[in-house]
Image (cartoon, rainbow, N blue to C red; front, side, top):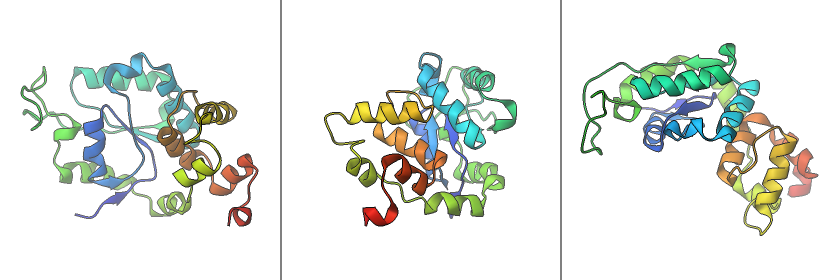
Length: 200
């Protein structure tokens, strides 16, 4: 099965949901850390900021916990910027778990790949995805610009995040994923005081 190219960021609950989706599509897949979204205002701020630039796909489990998380996201992000996707309620237990969930249904991580493929297929946009993939912003850029690998890299990341309306305390990986959506490579280089030819 080929992988879908999805240009919209996708929000799921946990890391195993994320891994499952990445087996189906090439996309920026972000997690709420389960109920952590209720405690981490910076996560919600990040999702809200991303939604100003692009629609955001929300795909949580179909159980009560998933509905609570989805409702929390829906209250923070404008309705017209959210793409709500739903998995069916299927009885069962994920292979890695010793016990089924409280409601006895499978979560996103337990869904068949074909089902997830079919669910996401309508949102494959080749033109947008190609533009996103053309953005070569990488960890090398972060290292060159002191945003990773240095003693004051966390401070530098916080300064850049603040300038762009993003939350402080983002890891290098999280900030990189956000910037690839929010900025073109040229815009990033401009913020850093560099030019493409100057970097070569």
